[in-house]
Length: 337
Ligand code: PBG
Image: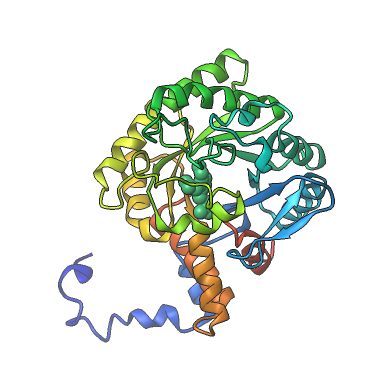
């Protein structure tokens, strides 16, 4: 121990840290963290129609899939060893409304997608986003008043219904991503009352008002619709202590796992949450992060596969139990499930 505190230079050449790095077998033996396909959650975008694959311009390599083509994606994920899919609907424009009520339709795109995946591959986990933004005409995650403010308690009442509808369709993990106060407790209560004892809640506990969500908003069709920004409910990137309070509350209200989002710019938050609470923490390497890696690779500024594996491993080192990433199938392939 002493060697690591003071006597480092004095102890050379007895201590040569490069010794364990020289050979691949040795590097493998001393690796402190390892990435496996089981660390990956794959977000998938769903669109209406049949036999549809729609590439998303700002997310090169990522498409929206019609429900009938989801089963094949789910089987591919299962075969790669990816344990869980996260589903996001691109709700048709004509079904969006001021109050986002399509979110409560038990036969909406999301619910049909959940059933399609669970029917095809019952053993894969399905995570569903609880928030109104793919369903509202104004692109916000909740109900708004005349001044455009997102209403907390009224929104929360709808989110509870939305979570119940998703659980009813077979979602394994409901993931409130809206950042309303008190919604985790409210959702937990109705899940218990509804007999959904084993449905998990992964709280987007520390979700920041970030510039990295642009391509996602294209993917779910809300970018052009969004009025204003989300800083009235998502967190200020300046804050870290507040993230710990968010996590503490969500855990107290019944969250099983918590998420930090975005990913790489917030690894300090992942680490602090892990150390403080000792619960499973997930990170979301969001759309803008994916797009940056793809842009770097396309520009010849870095090797795509190396960038993907290094960034994903960084989440493990920071203390994450897993990562939501659009690179999940590529990473799982590289890791050779
Ligand atoms: C919406 C939601 C967002 C993301 C996941 N759920 C966007 C937002 O808050 O505007 C972003 C994911 C990504 O950028 O990949 N509730």
